[in-house]
Amino acid sequence: MRSIDARSATRVTLASKTQRRARGGRAVAARAVVKETTTMEEIAKSPRPMKIVFVSAECSPWSKTGGLGDVVGSLPVELAKRGHKVMTISPRYDQYEGAWDTSVHVEALGKSVGFFHEKKQGVDRVFVDHPAFLAKVWGKTGSKLYGEKSGHDFADNQERFAMFCHAALKAPLALTNLGYGEDVVFVANDWHSSLVPVILKQVLKPSGLYAKAKCAMTIHNIAFQGRFFPVPMATYGLPESAGDDFFFEDGYSKVYDEKNPAKEEGKEVFDGKIYRKLNWLKAGFINADKNLTVSENYAKEIASNKSKGVELDDVIRKYGMEGIVNGMDPAEWNPAKDKFIDVPYDKTTVVEGKAAAKQALQAEVGLPLDPTAPVFGYIGRLEEQKGCDIMFEAIPKLIKAVPNAQVVILGTGKKSMEKALEKLDSSVPNCAGIVKFSAPLAHFINAGADFLMVPSRFEPCGLIQLHAMQYGTVPIVASTGGLVDTVKEGVTGYHMGAMDPDDLLPADVDAMVETCAAAAADYATPVFKKMSATCISQDLSWKQPAKKWEGVLEEMFFGTPETTKKAEVVVPVAKADELAARA
Ligand code: ADP
Image 1 (cartoon, rainbow, N blue to C red):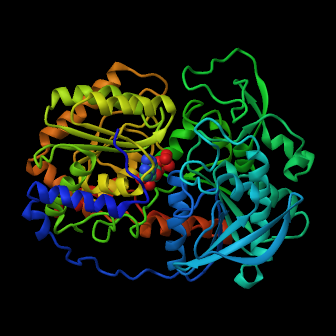
Image 2 (cartoon, rainbow, N blue to C red):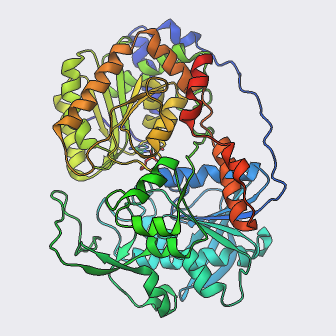
Image 3 (cartoon, rainbow, N blue to C red):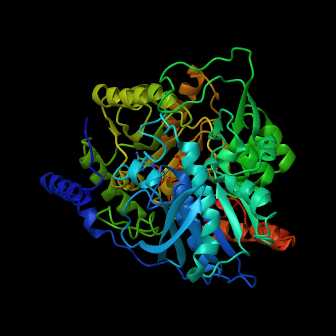
């Protein structure tokens, strides 16, 4: 098992250089240069600036377990560039360099909480300070924000996040120096902050506060809903009458947490009974002024049936859902400025740049330094949602079918899947499996792989395929959710069809092997070169999605239709052919 320490990026890079030198590093690497080709396109400032407050359990780079952190880290920056005043509120899980104690304290659900603050890239980053966050998670950021391990959520997550929501609603009023006040637009994200629209509508507005304020509820993954056994509404600081909005009939008997951990193997079966639960997300949908999700196709999918909507499809149909495809953060994901790769490159030097990055990746993970090998990468959570079980079955078959193919898989998640990955690593030739949460290696893979595999059973938007494309790496994706909106078959990637939502089917494994083998056959031909060039030519930043976000929030806050502005923003697949013609 090879491992990379996220803190030792320098050591990693030096080691790679030494190895390359020892093997006679290719001259091509030294020649690749970046020509600054990007034009500074003027960003239109909004004539009606809003005060926008994002509330989220994660905010990258301070805290992140996945796409939620990425979105709340980067979308606000783009909205600030458009002239809005933007604040994010997330828990203070750690001692964040640059974030200072405001000395402002408020009471939230009977507890005294403080606020730390940092202004960065035009955005007010506010961190809610309480031992329930700091003492529990300090030193364990990465994937440990919700519990010690996957399926073992902290037993007090309800209390933690209820307190967090109350504190977040006090921040714009209490932090007077920041100049937000009452006329704000809240954007709550995922179940952890879904009490925000409920408290706003059922407690604060009736008390005369936030009269003009509005709240959008955004979901980044419908599978995580915050289902709990019933507690008195007073536990959440809500009137008992709010209980109806939370009421949920659940076919599953359990609520999993650290005291009742989910079993690794075997699915929970319905016993035919109905269990009375509370569902935070449901209450959020009902009380929000607008429900949003992270891609247009996912918005349609989750409203279509019980399975895709994870039993909230009826609520979604009733209260509506609009999709906006995510952008990605070009400050973090940009091959021309990537601090982890040795040879920066852009679309004019993508061939040479990727050749150098591939060599570095191969050296780093211990694969043969073979410039002709098609390299398939994966970055993400090791879970059924991501289709990792399908991928683990497919890899040995792929390597049999394409003997010079190489595979690099980076991920953490379910213990059983981590073990399966370690087994692949030790038993399958040309396959490196790394069980780590490692930003440097994620960058190495995006730059050095030729293809990125995304065999997800469902995928609300998916950011990894956007990151990959920005590095000229061609994605091979399952046809679901945001992957349909962002990857165009034969133009910016390959589709392997939709995977079975529940089971591991041989037909899905075969589809993955066949699609990857077909991609490998295109590798080293002009087809691949053109696809890679088209991928890297796309503007996948927040520039366009932020304009649609602005339109949606304006509609909600001012009550004016913004159809024209919204219609100007199209999903990436709609522009792919035009870009390919020019690539
Ligand atoms: P999700 O939010 O469902 O986990 P996304 O594709 O939207 O999936 O976002 C995943 C983000 O987390 C990406 O930025 C990806 O690079 C990062 N990531 C996931 N696993 C790892 C890992 N093991 N090491 C480093 N980064 C990771």
